[in-house]
Length: 446
Image (cartoon, rainbow, N blue to C red; front, side, top):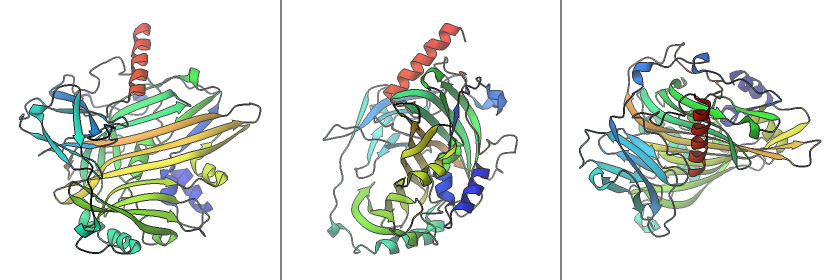
């Protein structure tokens, strides 16, 4: 990945480091079906940190809009007084694990952009089928004591106040990571992992480091046609979506003049007034850049969330950014590249909490009537964290930035595989895939 980035930087006149990093790089190969790899082939797992028994209580449920009854996607649930958290999935479902000895009067705070936050006592939750309803927040301009500023001025204040608003201590985070690849509507690859992240201070230019705790992976090559489709550097890519830590190309002082910013709306989250700022690259900029929305806390001038995409109108340039290797006789180009990052506030400072990226590719074959569409999704959620004075991981511990989480079957037959770790609840379609994998492995006796 790093070599590819170096080559790409020479090609473009404008500094596009983040654009290159955020393009979730795929490798396409024809007719090569690699053998399943074992865990030891690219990482070592420390057995003592992996719980064998559950010392926690599980709560499952769904976060929904009170009026429409629609699911609220990627809502944040945090256990009050702790750093334990989880995120609802794209169907609104959540799974939260808390220690068995936690007091039942402890509250779980549920928040979602544009909705009133809600606190729910653990004692009121059942193990399954909980429904947490949130109400939409309305706000008028009269509620704002200071008139809206110029959007460009707001973004400059965001940049100038980064050191003041974001964590300036190293953090050790426990995160859950998932990556999937779909061919049309069918899943062909699934990987999940619990990853230890050494998060550098937001004022530091040193990169974040990752260490793998536990993972499970599988792929169904029978659905891959003649192409194997691999995702390179996925866990690192999710962290690169943290635009306050890696601001190049959107929030760098030398880059923001390439964009037009406008105040699109005003909303609230957890009783904080939020500017919704839309941005798009200026018309005279030829290279593909980003467009989307930034959510800025009016009081602190901190970005609390960002939802954005890459301009892929120029298929040739977009393809050059995303594709590292493609099969002969095929034209490959992205049709969608969208990203999301949410921040979490703790003790007056903001930090990375969740990110998601989704890229859809189309493959047109010269000698085939029909084309093929692949969609890759990556996501990472911080489920626990602490400030840490420890040094980053040793060279033999950390994951490589160009890692490809190869297919393997380890763990899928174990219903308690994740132990006490909080994970993102699988969607119904992913859950179906996992059940099929488990059945297949049991038949093999693995």
